[in-house]
Length: 321
Image 1 (cartoon, rainbow, N blue to C red):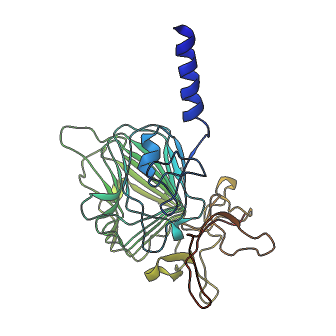
Image 2 (image 1 turned 180 degrees about the vertical axis):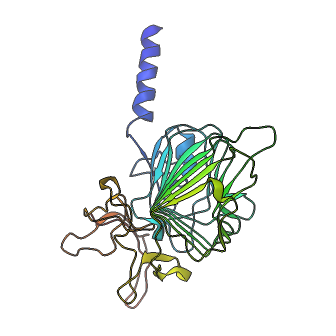
Image 3 (image 1 turned 45 degrees about the vertical axis):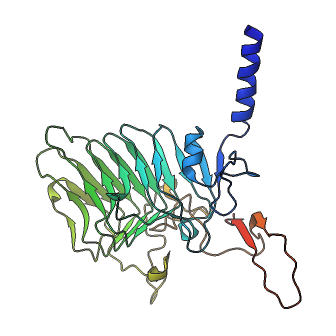
């Protein structure tokens, strides 16, 4: 009996932990995939349900977006190496008390039926990196009481409200905290809003952030601190079409204007670029032809064609290193 139990345990571990992380592809994924590179999951929630704590997500196709994701475990990392330009997702909910959650490299769309595009429930902790929250139908990021968010190299553009911080009557909201570094907040009705201005109801700190061209920065400046504020104008390549890479206009750009610390440097060792395309996890602005790109998968359905016919080929390319 003992030998059979050990064998069963070994077989379970062999099948469930054959690879350290899960892969997800809306284009190539399978409803019954196992999370391997050969048989990726189709949705992020599949990987979470299977117990994976590190999840690499591959690009979406045109007009596609990943379903809403609910994270109900500690120490979860969900990221894209392709960057937010080609990574569309409806939104994220981090369940109550869940710690050490990292989300990186997405364009988060939001949903009218959800309170926020990214919702951190009470006493949860989330790190949001290299992501874009723009034109969201409701608030971009909500922190419920006691939640902590560290937001680095993100863009909040023309949202219905950038960050909303909660306090519930009968509960202490002491500890509800936002740390934002190297971020761009532009065109929002407010950057941060507290639903209560009672003492100890949260803190918001902005360092090396662009906070211009918003209707208001905060409805409670007493607990909102701003250091190293960036005042140079921001220019994006084409925000209306979702291209939030920094552009240069008459010699002015927010590239290399972020935090000078080594931990925030761009991949090439230069000073941090503000926004979603800067920092150590940034996708390069321009490819280097001599290095090429790493093609992960090519999907071509079997088909008979004649000269002059058109065929459709799906190609997934990992960002140039």
